[in-house]
Image 1 (cartoon, rainbow, N blue to C red):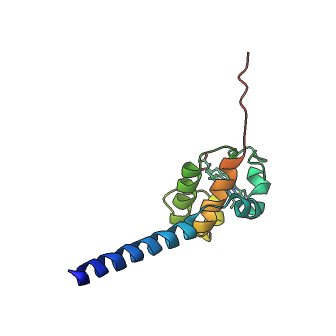
Image 2 (cartoon, rainbow, N blue to C red):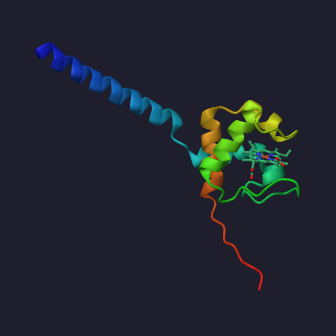
Image 3 (cartoon, rainbow, N blue to C red):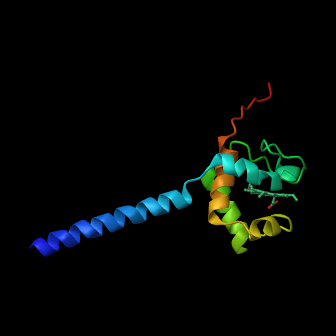
Length: 113
Ligand code: HEC
């Protein structure tokens, strides 16, 4: 009985530390994303407002959406001559940070009269 409960404690500790490791590795950091966004600013702007007409605005876009698109460009599931090159060498952490940065930008919308 004693052995079993010790094992259970050990297992719980292992699970907890593994979860902590995971959350540190993938905690998105918008400040890091802002730095990384210097690679994106010629087209999407540092503020997420696109500088070229064929690029979309990223300001305020949801983190999940940005992340999914970057992963799709990286894997080749989504293709674009510019983005496929940009995304090729991004790590999961960099993608999370970039997505957190662009999501954190606040935008307002004004509809025409
Ligand atoms: C040379 C210009 C250029 C650079 C640099 C660039 N992008 Fe893009 N990006 C584009 C274009 C053009 C598209 C539209 C692709 C399409 O039409 O499918 C795009 C699309 C995207 C999308 C998909 C958005 C959507 O609405 O579906 C994301 C996300 C994105 N870029 C993120 C980034 C990030 C993050 C960086 C920097 C690491 C970056 N891009 C660098 C030109 C660029």
